[in-house]
Length: 165
Image 1 (cartoon, rainbow, N blue to C red):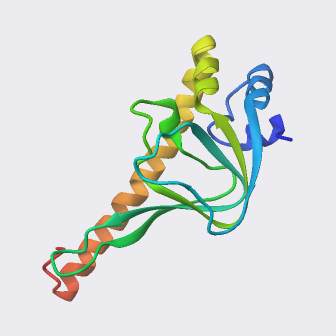
Image 2: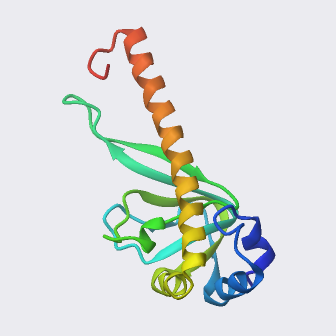
């Protein structure tokens, strides 16, 4: 059973009041997943927002490695407890942009996207706080991605690998 206190610990929901948290609990469900479980692929329709309760999920994409190398699977992010993923469920075009794979035994808290959007529409203050929380998380992911990109390009320059510099 999903608890309001656990949701309150998650940054995305931390600014919601008790009544709003109770509404979220009513539409949440818990799922258990084994390592290696593919939750979704790039291009799949996004129908749920996920919150990691326990465990870890990796978000990956295929990266073109140049004309002479095959594409490579690249881990873009690792989602750990109290972090959310699958945010495309709350915004159009509702398509996943990464693959999501369970990395270790994981408990997920799952929110049906349509039900969540319905709550957010009926309570605009709740909707705004959830969007702000998602924006904070996305901004942190973008910052990490930029740092990774800069470090990889710097490494390419230092090693003389001009194919990627």
